Amino acid sequence: MVTRRAEAAGGAGATVDEGPAVQDHYPADAAHCYGCGARNPFGHHLKTRWADGSRTETITRFTPGPEQTAMPGYVYGGLVASVLDCSGTGSAALAGTHAAGLDLEGDGSLRYVTGTLEVRYQRPTPMSVELVVRGRVEEVKGRKVTVALTMTAGEDEVASGRVVALQLPDEMRSS
Ligand SMILES: CCCCCCCCCCCCCCCC(=O)SCCNC(=O)CCNC(=O)[C@H](O)C(C)(C)COP(=O)(O)OP(=O)(O)OC[C@H]1O[C@@H](n2cnc3c(N)ncnc32)[C@H](O)[C@@H]1OP(=O)(O)O
Image (cartoon, rainbow, N blue to C red; front, top):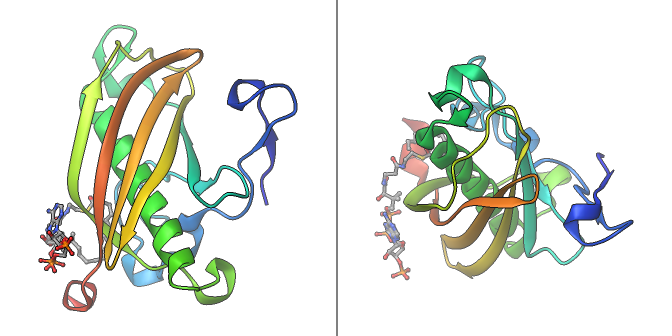
C-alpha cells in the first residue's frame, strides 16, 4: 500500500493515494497498454488508486520528461491527453470492479477501453513537474463508466477532461 500525505489535496494531513493501484491487478493478457500496462516496457506505467475512502475519487501521478516536449519547457499535448486517457480507464476499472462487488486484490480488475476522450488544455503544462490527475466517477451504467478528470502541475490546473470507458468486450479480450 502506498500512502502519501499531501497538503495540496485537501489541507494539512489529508491522506491520498490509499490502497492498491488498479493497474497492478489488470489481467496479464490485458496489460500491454502504452499508458497503463505493466507489461509494456516503453509505456507510462501509470498507477491509479482511490484517493480516499469514498470510492468516487481517484488519483494518478506522472512526471513527464524532456522527450515529451512540445516546446522548450512545456509538455506535448498528446502526452497530456494520454495521461488523462489512462487515468480515466484506470478510474473506470476501479469503479466498475467495485460496482460489480468484486475485490480488486482477490478477484482482479475488470478491464475498460476508451470510448470517448475529451480534453481541454487550460494552460501550458510545465516540463519535469509531477502532474497529478484527479478522477471523479460520475456514472457507472452497465458496462459504461464516465469519469471527469483534472490535471494539476503544482498549484495550477493545466488540463481537464472526461473519459467514457466501456468494459472490454470478451471478443476483444481473446483476440
Ligand atoms: C482496444 C483494443 C483492445 C484489444 C484487447 C486487448 C486488451 C487490452 C486492454 C486495452 C486497454 C486499453 C486501455 C487504455 C485506453 C485505450 O487506449 S483503449 C484504445 C482506444 N479505444 C478503442 O480502440 C475502442 C474502439 N471502440 C470499440 O471497440 C467499441 O466502440 C467499444 C468502445 C468497445 C464500445 O462498443 P460496444 O461494447 O459494442 O458498445 P455498445 O454495446 O454498442 O454500447 C454500450 C453503451 O456504451 C455507449 N457507447 C458505445 N460506444 C461508445 C463510445 N465510443 N463513446 C461513448 N459511449 C459509447 C453506448 O451508447 C451504450 O450506452 P447506453 O445505451 O448503455 O447508455
